[in-house]
Length: 107
Image 1 (cartoon, rainbow, N blue to C red):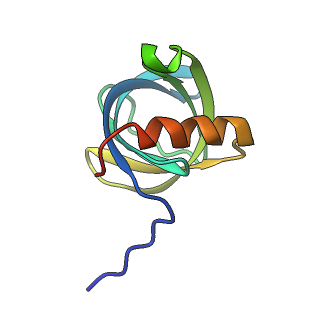
Image 2 (cartoon, rainbow, N blue to C red):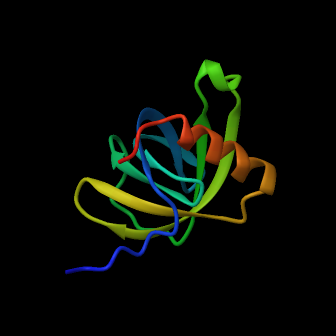
Protein backbone atom coordinates (compact mmCIF):
# COMPACT_ATOMS: atom_id res chain seq x y z
CA UNK A 1 0.00 0.00 0.00
CA UNK A 2 1.36 3.42 -0.96
CA UNK A 3 1.77 5.85 1.92
CA UNK A 4 0.06 9.24 1.56
CA UNK A 5 2.67 12.00 1.28
CA UNK A 6 0.44 15.08 1.43
CA UNK A 7 0.83 17.33 4.44
CA UNK A 8 -2.58 18.99 3.98
CA UNK A 9 -6.01 17.73 2.96
CA UNK A 10 -6.86 18.60 -0.62
CA UNK A 11 -10.41 19.75 -1.33
CA UNK A 12 -12.36 19.33 -4.55
CA UNK A 13 -12.72 22.51 -6.55
CA UNK A 14 -13.93 23.47 -9.98
CA UNK A 15 -12.65 26.77 -11.27
CA UNK A 16 -10.39 28.04 -13.97
CA UNK A 17 -6.94 29.52 -13.37
CA UNK A 18 -4.32 31.03 -15.60
CA UNK A 19 -1.08 29.05 -15.66
CA UNK A 20 1.67 31.19 -17.12
CA UNK A 21 4.23 29.55 -19.39
CA UNK A 22 6.99 31.72 -20.80
CA UNK A 23 5.02 34.82 -19.82
CA UNK A 24 1.80 33.81 -21.58
CA UNK A 25 -1.41 32.77 -19.76
CA UNK A 26 -2.89 29.34 -20.48
CA UNK A 27 -6.25 28.20 -19.12
CA UNK A 28 -6.19 25.30 -16.66
CA UNK A 29 -8.95 23.81 -14.51
CA UNK A 30 -8.25 23.67 -10.80
CA UNK A 31 -9.79 20.41 -9.55
CA UNK A 32 -8.22 20.08 -6.08
CA UNK A 33 -6.61 22.59 -3.72
CA UNK A 34 -4.99 22.80 -0.29
CA UNK A 35 -3.02 25.59 1.40
CA UNK A 36 0.15 23.85 0.15
CA UNK A 37 -0.66 22.99 -3.44
CA UNK A 38 -3.19 22.05 -6.09
CA UNK A 39 -4.10 19.63 -8.85
CA UNK A 40 -4.71 21.13 -12.28
CA UNK A 41 -6.31 19.61 -15.33
CA UNK A 42 -4.74 20.88 -18.53
CA UNK A 43 -7.11 22.68 -20.91
CA UNK A 44 -5.06 24.74 -23.35
CA UNK A 45 -1.30 24.83 -22.99
CA UNK A 46 1.82 23.84 -24.90
CA UNK A 47 3.54 20.57 -24.10
CA UNK A 48 6.52 21.98 -22.23
CA UNK A 49 7.90 21.38 -18.75
CA UNK A 50 9.10 24.18 -16.50
CA UNK A 51 10.58 24.11 -12.99
CA UNK A 52 8.25 26.86 -11.78
CA UNK A 53 4.90 28.30 -12.88
CA UNK A 54 3.12 31.51 -11.88
CA UNK A 55 -0.61 30.94 -11.35
CA UNK A 56 -3.40 33.51 -11.32
CA UNK A 57 -6.31 32.34 -9.18
CA UNK A 58 -9.52 34.36 -8.92
CA UNK A 59 -11.39 33.50 -5.74
CA UNK A 60 -15.20 33.23 -5.83
CA UNK A 61 -17.34 36.25 -4.97
CA UNK A 62 -18.05 35.03 -1.42
CA UNK A 63 -14.27 35.33 -0.85
CA UNK A 64 -14.27 38.88 -2.16
CA UNK A 65 -13.46 37.87 -5.74
CA UNK A 66 -9.82 38.64 -5.00
CA UNK A 67 -7.06 37.57 -7.36
CA UNK A 68 -4.14 35.63 -5.97
CA UNK A 69 -0.79 35.27 -7.67
CA UNK A 70 1.03 32.10 -6.67
CA UNK A 71 4.29 30.45 -7.67
CA UNK A 72 4.09 26.68 -7.99
CA UNK A 73 6.55 23.85 -8.57
CA UNK A 74 5.46 20.63 -10.35
CA UNK A 75 5.34 17.53 -8.15
CA UNK A 76 4.07 15.08 -10.79
CA UNK A 77 2.36 15.20 -14.15
CA UNK A 78 0.53 12.84 -16.51
CA UNK A 79 -1.16 13.37 -19.88
CA UNK A 80 -4.10 15.30 -18.43
CA UNK A 81 -3.14 16.64 -14.99
CA UNK A 82 -0.35 18.30 -13.05
CA UNK A 83 0.08 18.37 -9.28
CA UNK A 84 1.76 21.57 -8.08
CA UNK A 85 3.29 22.63 -4.76
CA UNK A 86 2.99 26.31 -3.86
CA UNK A 87 6.33 27.96 -3.05
CA UNK A 88 7.17 31.26 -1.38
CA UNK A 89 3.57 31.96 -0.35
CA UNK A 90 2.97 34.96 1.90
CA UNK A 91 1.48 33.89 5.29
CA UNK A 92 -1.65 36.00 4.66
CA UNK A 93 -2.17 34.35 1.26
CA UNK A 94 -1.58 30.90 2.81
CA UNK A 95 -4.30 31.67 5.41
CA UNK A 96 -6.67 32.75 2.62
CA UNK A 97 -5.94 29.52 0.75
CA UNK A 98 -6.65 27.54 3.94
CA UNK A 99 -9.99 29.33 4.48
CA UNK A 100 -10.92 28.80 0.83
CA UNK A 101 -9.98 25.09 0.93
CA UNK A 102 -11.88 24.62 4.21
CA UNK A 103 -15.01 26.00 2.55
CA UNK A 104 -14.91 23.16 -0.02
CA UNK A 105 -15.62 19.47 0.50
CA UNK A 106 -12.80 16.96 1.00
CA UNK A 107 -11.27 15.28 -2.05
